Image (tube, rainbow, N blue to C red):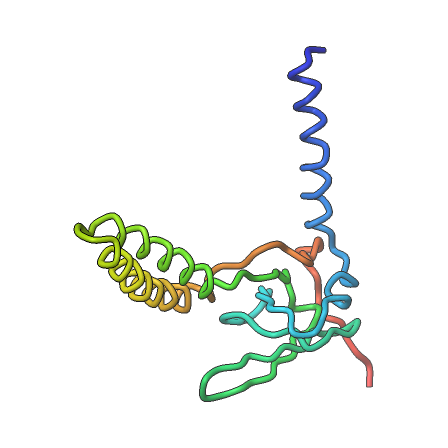
Length: 164
């Protein structure tokens, strides 16, 4: 075996192991999340829009809080209806950072004249593009998610029938 193949194999094993771990159907991973963790929940039936703040999980359900500027709603999702639970990124902060960084570079590079003028335009452009990045991040945030905490491995899961 050549050295390159051996190194490739050694690098592939941890990658495959981490992928398998992320795809586990282990509900306890959800139950052990700290309160306030931002989540995206994908359902089998119906839709959940946006991200919620994790409040807790039992063997039967997940409870989340959807906070807004003018309203606050609490939702409970049955485990049988949950297809996947994802951690989320803060797209607003990412958008602000990218916009502010780009604005600072553009403002400093495109302005001619004394150093003070270039610094002033760099700060001004960073503020404007940072604000635009924040707005884009806010709009796009509900559509993106990060690492899977839980993925139901049984695609045909039927709801529990309860006898009264």
